[in-house]
Image (cartoon, rainbow, N blue to C red; front, side):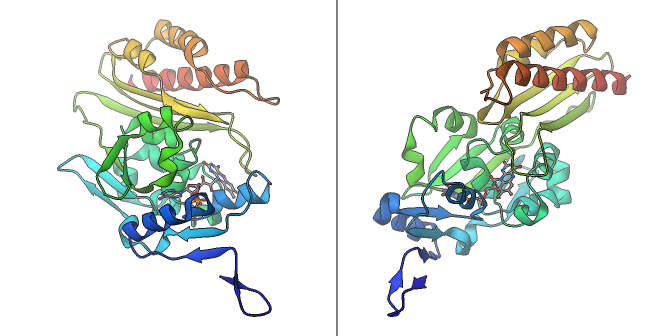
Length: 300
Ligand SMILES: Cc1cc2nc3c(=O)[nH]c(=O)nc-3n(C[C@H](O)[C@H](O)[C@H](O)COP(=O)(O)OP(=O)(O)OC[C@H]3O[C@@H](n4cnc5c(N)ncnc54)[C@H](O)[C@@H]3O)c2cc1C
């Protein structure tokens, strides 16, 4: 906490709650003046770039023990990541790599190691456009919130589709995100891919982010296809009708050219002055078409 020449405390004030209940209560008391602060890597860019004013009160959630770390339970088939788990922790964990490889690949594509050491999975999710989101969507992730009680759970896909319009979630504390392990079929080969198209040397929003998992049997037939796209200011989402179209299809030239056309038709990215919508659609379609082609070749 800063102090003036007379030794009187001045804003910004930093609070260090020890429990989720205490943090949540502080937020209720401080209202819009108080901001939950995890790694502060995103918050910092907002006030440094003039997009937001620096808040008067930071509610530092780093001392809340239950928000840290992760647990992967192969019996229940789930992985639970505390909101304060850093992207570096996820990125370097062999256990996470084995269970949720697309998530590890996504974190590898976020910022530089110095930022990843501070940046958290919770902060990345709540940015609504974080590069981990397409990967998390593939694992049917569920958000666990503290809103006075610990009972509020919400599928990530639902939260993403309503978050911009309904700001009530900003009053809550994100506790963890729970991922579901895909069920592996021993008769099929599983393929996973994550791509981020964009400049890496500075924080320029990506053009497209694409996450894909699928299974291919010995006859090149596709099953359990999961596809999520995002990028730039586009809130990532699963393209469920394209997933349904692909399930049961042969991974051949015909399917690949049909899926290319479907992505161009159905993916709705947000464009900007530098990267128009048409370019983002084609970039996404090319990424997915090339992954299908690679998978079909490898399987053979
Ligand atoms: C140089 C640089 C490069 C970057 N590159 C990328 C990139 O390539 N890809 C990318 O996706 N992001 C990037 N970022 C943005 C940022 O680093 C990540 O999104 C990061 O994961 C945010 O996590 P954080 O812990 O720092 O969040 P914070 O900045 O602490 O918080 C972000 C938001 O989430 C809220 N919040 C955080 N945790 C909770 C919680 N548990 N409950 C309730 N609210 C919470 C905060 O109030 C705030 O509104 C970059 C940032 C910088 C500075």
